[in-house]
Length: 237
Image 1 (tube, rainbow, N blue to C red):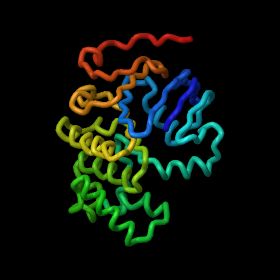
Image 2: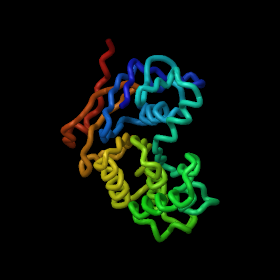
Image 3: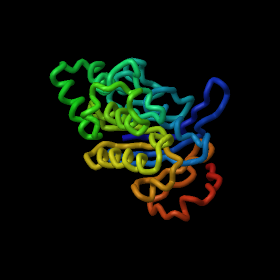
C-alpha cells in the first residue's frame, strides 16, 4: 500500500526531517510510529496525506508517487484518507453532526445517505446522543471520538493518526485506541504516531521506531524491555 525509498524531506527552514527513509506498509497493517521528539513521526504522516512534498527519493501511496503527482491528484487522494490530529481540528462553529458530515459533503453525498452514514459512525464511537451538540460542550475525549468518527465517515482504506491520545487520560486513551483497533479489524490500515509506549502493550501492533529521520528498528514482540531501550544509531549504506 505504501512504499518509501531513500525518502528525504527538508523543510524551507533548512531542517532535515527525513533522511533516506526506507519503509513498506501493507494493506491491513496496524502500525505504530515511535521515536523521540523530532524523530520524523509527524513528517511521515504529512508526506502520506500530501501536506508536504518529498525533497527527494520516493514516497507512494496506492501507486501514486507524491513527488510527481499533480495538486488535483493529491486532493483526490486526501479525500480517501482519514486523518486524526492530537488537537482534533474540529470546527467549533458547527455541530458534531456537521463536523462528521463534512468529508461526505465534500465528496458530494446526497443528504439522506450522508445523514445515515454520519449517524452510524457516531453510534460506533458512542456519541449518537451528542449529534446536535457543539464541540465546545464536549470533553477532550469526546472531541477526539468525534475526530475519529469524522476520519472514518467516508470509509477510507487508510487512517493516519498523529498522537491521537496525547492529551487524554489513560482510560480515555485506551478507549480511543480500542476504536482504532476495531477499525483495523474491519480492514482499515491504521498508522499512528505515538509516544505512549504503555498503550502498545495493551494493543499490540507493528512497531516502527524512527531516529533522526530514518528507520532505527522494527519490533514485533512488543517486549517492554526492548521498547524502552535507547535507540541505536541507524546504519547507513
